[in-house]
Image 1 (tube, rainbow, N blue to C red):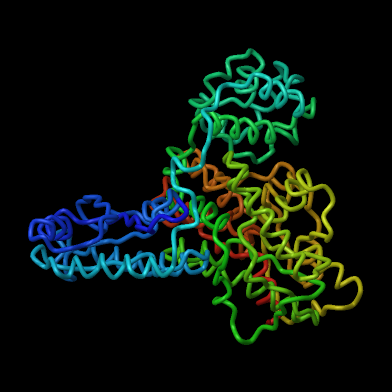
Image 2: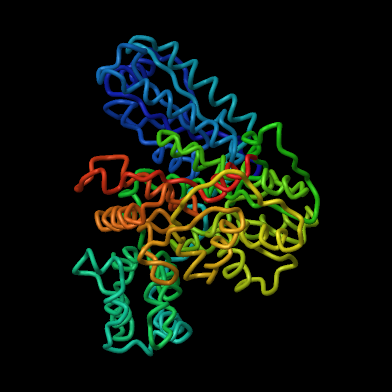
Length: 537
């Protein structure tokens, strides 16, 4: 509260063998260390998942510390070395999203090194006092009232999405990719439960989180039920009732870390998100064209072990725009678009992110915002408009924007290079937004041959994991199926227009797979990166 002395809360993960004994012995010896140090005993610092660290900050901790064995003395061989690498990566992420990497520290010591433990905690608390409190409200400080089941809200969801028109045709189930691999899942079953008034158990309903919101059912429904919007709003109601998607998100390798980062960005004021930009590209702080980078810099750090170099998508986009004589605005003030939070029921944080982005674009004076991420484009074009009405700027996918420039003679797409590709269509760009032709036409204008897969356009197979929710066995089967389909085209490269699709498809073949590896042996590349390289940029 205002006027009270700031006593930082520091969640301290201490290993069982050295860190925890050092903390206890420090107290036994009456060596002074801050009262806000909250010890969490773990078997090894290597077992502290990055998502656990980010979750501590999301829940309001002012700082986090890891305390483990000395290097080369880890009781689990190299657990502390892995922890050290993770801490360095997360410190960069905290700097990116405006929380400051100085809030996270690690120390490696012996069980008897009590003075070292005390120095770590005292120095960290002093640093945090300089930085100030974590801007994110702590759990229990948000003033939320206990929610109760609201039948009127459910009825409104049913009515506004035309879910009441759902009948026994079963068309949705017959085309649903989740239902193909999970016999217990059926889209209409969720609708029927809502229609029958049994949604008071909504908070416990796992099926609303199993849906991948690919809109395959929307595209095929003869009654035009907006099933994906039905699911999105049902998730929001479930969250209000205390339902959480955390158990399903934990099935994903990143364990909910990205969602935590997004919520943190909703509350922080100053970021440091432009360090990835090389010196050989030209950008501006104001201008007519704004390039929205989205979460590429953050995801690059989260998935650093995959070596996907995700920021190269953004670099390539800027190079393509520079090639057309455009120096786009790339803003340090933009934040995550909020797509994932919107689809996991966190509407409050979503709107905070939305307002920050609208303000950043307004300050830039941009008339057009260009996206390489279909999720960002979809969020602006549909979700922001649903809340704000008309936007004061145009939003376009990079393929649409570059095609317009080509039509006007403002960009040279000629190249001596050649190549054959097959295109994996993002659900958000395709079924959600109806953008099918521009990505293809741009490649063809550049002299790139496209070999189509069997399932394209509104029948394209989803990558299986939307909003990093439900990375299940079913999702992995979808991913392998899609890559095998791409391989059968005999194209040289599989291109993805969505960075998350590339993450998920690459993940599917990065581990042991239940099929001959030759069946999925095809390079997976980003659309924008491939095009820029093809043009020798």
